[in-house]
Length: 131
Image 1 (cartoon, rainbow, N blue to C red):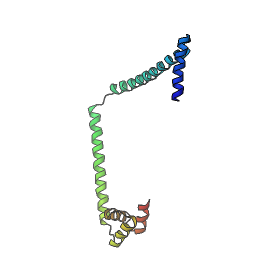
Image 2 (image 1 turned 135 degrees about the vertical axis):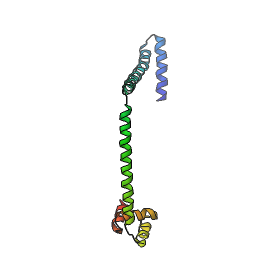
Image 3 (image 1 turned 90 degrees about the vertical axis):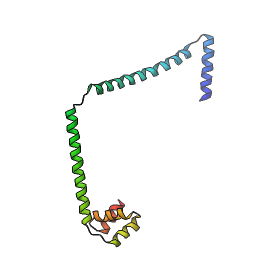
Image 4 (image 1 turned 30 degrees about the vertical axis):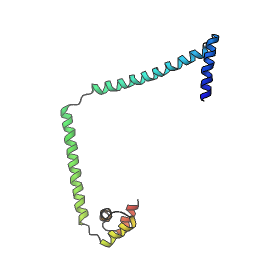
């Protein structure tokens, strides 16, 4: 590929010396295409940024959205705490926790959590942990 480029340049120089300018015209047309593509992309970018600049956010809408998000987070937090309380109530056997720890090679906390989520059922906990 490099040799053909060198030859073409050489051929272009030879053609220029002979008065034939076809190769030279082709070389000057190609760079002219690239800026056009770049300019169209810049124009598209300007349209996008112009649109974003025209759009305003009202402070009341922002406050409403923030309160909705805050309420949703507090509800999720309460639900999570309730779930943790329910899981803590589930009785699990130490042998089952150790079995899951050894079989799945996971921490004690992860094994206990898996067992509690499946109400102490070792088989269901193992199946869920393998998925």
